[in-house]
Length: 212
Length: 212
DNA sequence: ACAATAAGCGAATGGCTTTCACTAAAGAAG
DNA sequence: CTTCTTTAGTGAAAGCCATTCGCTTATTGT
Image (tube, rainbow over all chains, first blue to last red; front, side, top):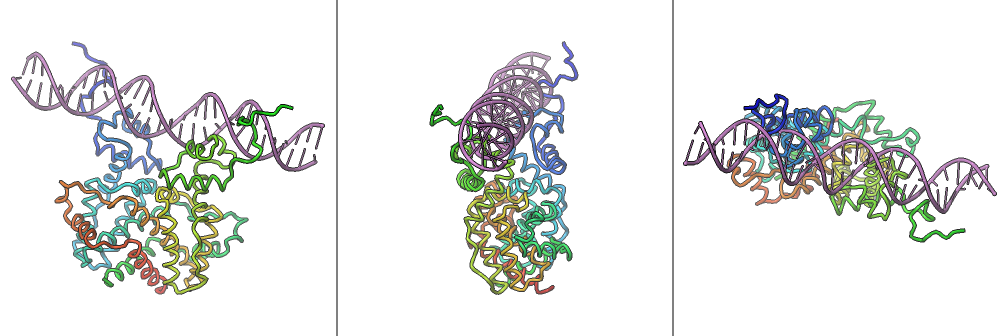
């Protein structure tokens, strides 16, 4: 009987080198550190060849969905079995924002595909439950949750696009006088965008829900 | 003197085949029709070779910014020299939404880079002016505009992610009871997401601005 | 008239995702 | 325990993509 070289990488390994969970976690890490996902580089991180992924996953999109799952699993569900609608809105928004600001580069990719990871679905299921306990009419729960979710994503991305979402050259300052002045005003008198959005969403959602 | 073959594509052409404006327009068209941007295919559309773009543009990112410009130039500025804050919010939100729903595939790419196209900057400059005419404190204009912008993007993307942002298998329906029930509730009692968001933003922004 | 610049092209580079035939171990069946 | 099937790895290759560079020809400026 031959003892194969210990460094041979051929054939099935004695102990598994990959799992869907490990792939999701590594992908999330990679997004945090490199702000993008490349399958060859992910393979390097995991000490594996790129083609190996396709035994666990159908393709890149699924890896991104696993990263979403890893993000949810890392973020604890806020304690809030019940509460006022105001509390519920602020807690959910804050929970989303905390998760999203960790990985801004992932957000555009998450936006373009539906949520299918079980851990993520379970988290949203809990959010829905809390909304309903706070007295939201059922047909408004999904629209309200969508509003919170995209606001959290938008704000987290804005925070990434450095300094400002609008980039004006020095020479062009006179060309866009109002925009330039407004940028200066908020620079001189900074506004916490997340707190502002939380106020806007809380007041707005409560008004829209009570009007029903 | 030689008369070169009319079909020769060598050397500088007698009349220009490309321009930044034409590139932006074609890129926007491509996003609408193919939901993605590929430089080789864009070159095909314009009857040109891919390397030619780099005489007009520094790279892919700049082409995307030109597409943003083309999108703004195609969308008319709403007539509204002045108005109540409620009108202003709804008009701006509606204008953004109209533009964004035309090209959902472009939105994730726009999110990741600052606005630098002159036509877009001018449009935002006008939005700022209208906000100020409606009495918004200057330091809140930018946060308010950011909120409208990301809400419009989020809603346009949600509308793209077909049917629902949450995809639940038939077998899993019992695993996510609240989410599933809420999806059913909104399916049975449909809610216009854009109108809902407009209500939320109008009420919320006015509250946040008046509290100041 | 002529030099400098500008706008095209062709070919090549290096990156990416995905597929497929192959190998060796694990697990199931008798 | 042997044998068969399934599984989790590898390696090589195909077919995309964005970008660069040297070449050619026209336009522009002096």
